[in-house]
Length: 264
Image (cartoon, one colour):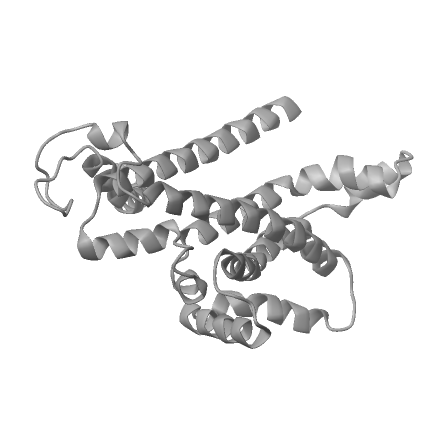
């Protein structure tokens, strides 16, 4: 009992981790299934046909390509803008700073149904046609808040004495930013970029409000396919995306540990 009490926190963390990973394991398992009907809900027979032909279902790879294109573009633009906003809020005092912080937080707290319908109304009033362009603008808008929060937390944790030391050693402001500030804030910037991409790639509600019949993203394709049948290729693409995210996270952790050992 003493040993159990000592490791109770570890057991709880492991149980939560297993609970979070079980859906991903089920998705990966059913990517090797060969269903007898239209719905891939019951295990029938082991097969690798879906992995050999991931684009075997019409339209699935087109929707995936559109989601990747919008997600990458939205994350890049939101990361650039969000990083600049985070530095402005974290390093400078100006009139309206508190109001700006509140405005940054509002897209994160607003329900997606309200935001999607509001953006649709705005785009209609401004004459912006529905489609991939409207979706991209909407994704940049709500991803921006998450990037600002992630980078701002990293900026607030920086020790200003490091930049002062660089200036004392003769570094210009640009050199100090590129060689000291930017490398120290890089983990926060990378976290914000990855979070923005995942939110953009996964979004359905806001996208559905601003999409056109020719701009079907992957989440919209999955939702539409679920009413007619669930192709096994959906599980294949979901498994691939999960493995890619896992490799990125593990690679980042290994790189951070290597840098810490090198610094020590």
